[in-house]
Each structure stands twice: as structure tokens, then as C-alpha cells.
Length: 207
Ligand code: OGA
Ligand code: MN
Image (tube, rainbow, N blue to C red):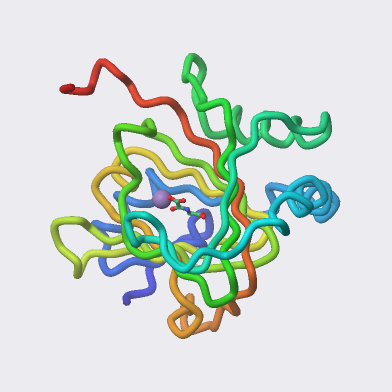
């Protein structure tokens, strides 16, 4: 993996310049998007519910292992402000967000294997906050697995995936034994992601 990065995109490395250019414009990471206090506040609301669920070994389509998940529609006022900030940062005006927020709790040994989010259920933008752990998200060209980029998702960062990164590349969270960024080991801990998506554009659908 070649290590191409400029200051603005220090969260990104790629297999080649062309991939770097494609992905830097369609996959953004904003470090410290939430403060430690905001992280605690989100966890305080999420944890009591999550703790009652069991980790599942495998997702229905086999993409995610050792996880538990829920969707949340109503938030405390403070947390709603954070969700609103995610949406106003990620979505341009006039975009219809999916109202419920997806919360995914991935165990330390859990993995999210390479997949593309279903175009039937979700629009062109996916925005996620990482809580409790940093991790590495790998994006691989669907048509050529040698073309890929790795993005460092620091604890409390926000990533915004759209366009090429969302449709033409798969995404995955690297498992513990592969979790490296620029030769630095990125220790995997239990990770909770809070993910906002937008509605698909129904006029694009063929069915
Ligand atoms: C997903 C997914 C990434 C994340 O749930 O489809 O890719 O940040 N999640 O948890
Ligand atoms: Mn996904």
C-alpha cells in the first residue's frame, strides 16, 4: 500500500494516485467531530438498551460478525443536537434523511466484511460517528480488488461516504489482526457507530 497523503487527507492512504483522488473527494473524515463529553452523552443513552441485546455471530447477509444493533428515532435534546449536526454536515439541503439512526455495536473481535450498502434502502450518503474505538475502514474497487484505500477512523471522528466511495467501492472494518494504518497498529476495542443515512432516490429505482 503506497503512502500518499496530504495534510488535509492525512486520514487516507491508497494503492495509487488515481484511487486517492477518487476517494479523497467521496470519503471524508472529520476528526474530533464529537467531544469526550458528547461521546459520554451518546453512550449514556445507547448503552442501557444495547446491554440487553446479545452479540450475534453473523448478519443475515454474512457481512457483519459479532455485533448487535438497533435503530433510534427519539433522542434526548442534547443528543438530538449531535444528530442534527451530523446531518447538516453530511447532507446538502433538500436531502431527506432516514429518520431513524442506525446504531451498530461491534465487539473487539467483530468484523464488518466488504459490502456495499443496499441501494434499495439507502441513498447516496452515509455518515457515521465512531465511539469507543478507532478502526481502519478499507474501501476496495468493486471491479479491481488491487485498487483500494484505507481510512483511519479515529474514536469520536465522523466519516462521510458518498458517490464513488459509496457506490463503486466496497467498505469494511479491518479485523484486529489486520488493523494497521501507515504501519501503525490501530488497536481494535469494542466500537459503537452511530450512522445517519438518507432516503434512496425512488425515481432511480427500476422496480
Ligand atoms: C454498515 C456499515 C460501518 C460502521 O452498517 O453497513 O458499513 O461505521 N457500518 O459501522
Ligand atoms: Mn455499510
